[in-house]
Image (cartoon, rainbow, N blue to C red; front, side):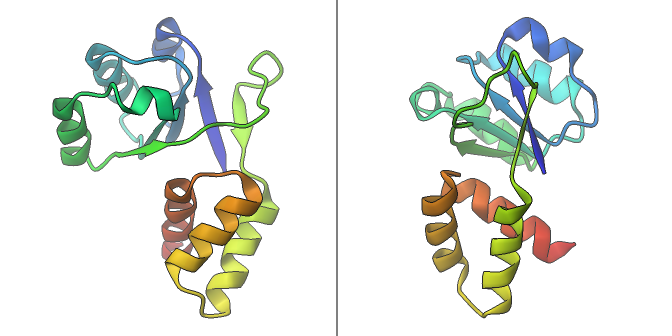
Length: 135
């Protein structure tokens, strides 16, 4: 599973229309969010750093909810955009989630443990959990 890291407004228009998970490494305006949704019609998750989450307007939150797009708080730890434009979620994390699910652990337990071990935020772990169990 890969997260596309976008570090500038200008980059939004160069994205692949099939992107499903995008991390915005800049403070997006409402216009930027609309442009992202328009450029990537299949988008499922937009991830923002904690400091930028507080600045997202209620109208954008409602718009994303109506589009069934999750707005998650989180970071891409140690990622260098100059080396790779994608942040890859290690397959070991996905395997760990599947393993814990098979053991009968609750979603909350899985989110808490995996987010602590992998530095992924609980929201992203929940997204992966739902995505993997649906597949």
